[in-house]
Image (cartoon, each protein chain N blue to C red):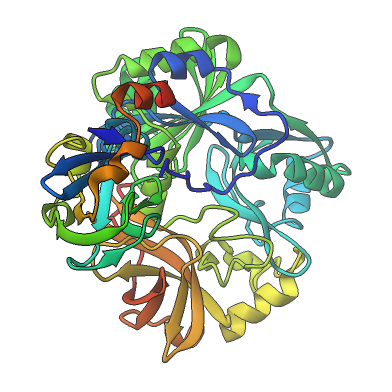
Length: 384
Length: 119
């Protein structure tokens, strides 16, 4: 009965890559597990529950250096590069102001999702942050699609930290006072004692917070400086997963993949007006036929929030039924520490996606009721 | 106290065997958030999965270490699953099995053997 660890959406490469901060994680007592090809901290001695709650109440520091950072450096003009980037995503790149960041997703020719990502307008170039498990494929995809207009340059000399929680601004503000002026999805280059930090006010926990790209040479010092702040506790992948689930955010490889469209996934808010039917730059991205069709007529299935009745968590892979017919599948599920109950998300046919619909879930052979509910499960605290 | 390779501890109480999970197993599981217990009076065979235990990290099972009848379950774990992390070797016992012959206990590891297993 040694527990099997849940798959968190990654896959193991033949050789496990090591984080630059590995020694720090070990010194902090981390339990390390393979994730997306990296040996990653799952949790520290406090445990997933306490780390999760600390992020909701104060601040937690995550090492997300496994993620891919890529610069798109225009050969001629920024606008050319932005327009080319729009052929890969149903998102408004051209209209993103300098110093702002936006959520997007690479689509494929059939309207599925290759990866979801963040990109920032940094004046003369674009900074893209992609998922670890997809980064090699994303790099090839961007190189193939964008090389006529820009150089696609992976950033290999920087780590990435996420400081998340309502007191993240107070903690980071002591080291870098300029963050006080940032609002949700701002992106800036800020100085920390001569070190150039690439800071965005964003994250994946549902809380206010920051993602900070730090040169490898200063990464350990900066991480330790943050950990010295009284608000901050180190937090691992376990808490990252339960936090994003409570926030209703998708985990690539589970809740979205090459078969799910952004419309089915409920990511229509990210499909900018100019790229929709009737917009200035409507269509012109991979998979536009399916995505625009689904926007017009509604998708056949939808990602929804689910609240299991009782206390038993329902995990990824649990099948959902209505009147004994299979109508859906849970793609992420577990215990929500801040909700203090089991929560899940998954796909159900459109006819069963209405809030309040009660479905039956096959939990180890026993049928258990589960209700379709709105997400997020826990209110977000973004600093808009 | 005896131990199984599945990280259960077994304690004899009259003709009953009390079953729990070891400190090591509780630590590996992490924060336990859900426990599903068998019905009292269920007849179980060695190896039957009789308890579902979920932590924030994963779902696991506890198998019946011996064949017999479930004569008691620890209902307090249903309302307070965290007890498994607080006191795995004591208050957080899971169930008691009535066995025909306590000789079956001889097959299990003693504390030293178990400590060697997890070392």
